Image (cartoon, rainbow over all chains, first blue to last red; front, side, top):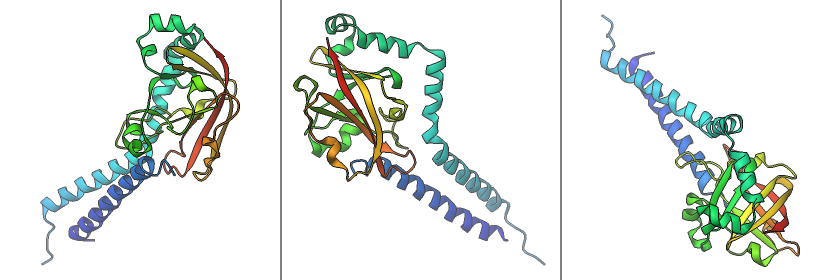
Length: 34
Length: 204
C-alpha cells in the first residue's frame, strides 16, 4: 500500500471518528427530551 | 526504478493515525471518567456524610449555616450532589439543562405537594458531566433533600426504572407528595430515560 493510499484511508477514518463524536454528543444533548 | 515515498507524507500519516486513535479512545472512555471521581469521593472523602447531615438538620439551621439554603436546591448524598435547581420555560430547555438541574415547568413544587419533576443531563462530550450522571447510584430507601423557599423537604427513594421517552406519565401530577428525577440512559447512546421516584418523608 502506498503512502498516498494510507493517507486517504486515514483521512477518511479521521472524518468518520469526528462524525461519530459529533453524533454521540448530539444524541446526549439534543435528543434528551425524547 | 520504483518511486520512493515522500518522508513528509509518512509523518502526516503517523499523525493522522494518532489522531484517529486518540479520538476513538476519548469516545469510549470519556463517559466512564466521572466514575473515577465517584470512586475517589466514596473512598477518600466525607462528602456523603456531610450531605446526609445537611438534609437531616432543620430548615432554619440549614438557612443559618449554609449559603446554599438561599436558593432552591437539591441535595442527594448517595450521588454526592448539592446543586441549585433552575426555573425556566420549556423554550429555554437546552440552555437550562446545560447549566444544571431544571424543574419541569409543568410540574408541581415541593411546597404545593403533588409531583415535582427535576431533570438534568447525564453526560455530554462537549460539556461538563451532567448533574444526574450518578442517578443510577440511587437505591430504594436513599434520602433526597430539597431545599425550597427556606424549608427542607426530605424524600425517600421508592423506585428506579428505565422507560422510553414516549412514557410521559412520569411527568403527571400525583395525589401524594413526591419528586421525580429523570435523565437520559444509557451513557453512550441515550435513547431511554432513567427515572427515580421518591416519596415525601418530612418537612423541617
